[in-house]
Image 1 (cartoon, one colour):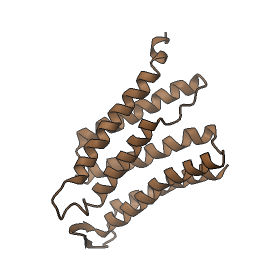
Image 2: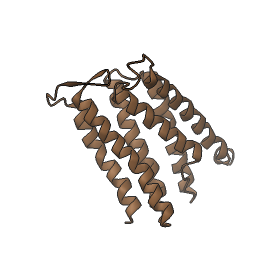
Image 3: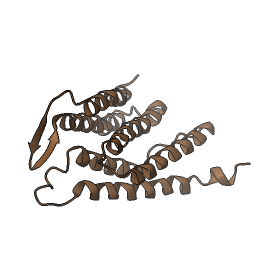
Length: 192
């Protein structure tokens, strides 16, 4: 297994740690950071999420720079992204920090595109993430990070950046989902 794939697997392995830290308070108390009051475990979980998210860029960088792009990597990388983002979104709904209707749309798109990728893989075609799909992923990561960090930096000036970022992520999620299905519509036209 090459280095980029190991980095991708490390992202998957950080998910349980993120979930445990954010869901179990451990009596760490709360903190005030740049005007935003938050439980310490939310801050620690946000840092774990951000570190896990940056591995997406790191594994891609190494894969391209050293020509280590593999079929396994093309499969694992978007899967790791979906697992991390899905876990975070579900937790944000549970904690009352994100509207469930938005997260249902986002996760539905993720499952639908994963299903499309599975159909295409059955035909021998591995679909790497598109540029719009990568923008969608980073928009989701920014939104989740802002929500986990209780809108720090923007709380003082009373701008709901976390919710604005979530709406932007929703728009890119829908747009990129439409793109995947439009570009691969032959699967549905040719099916019997």
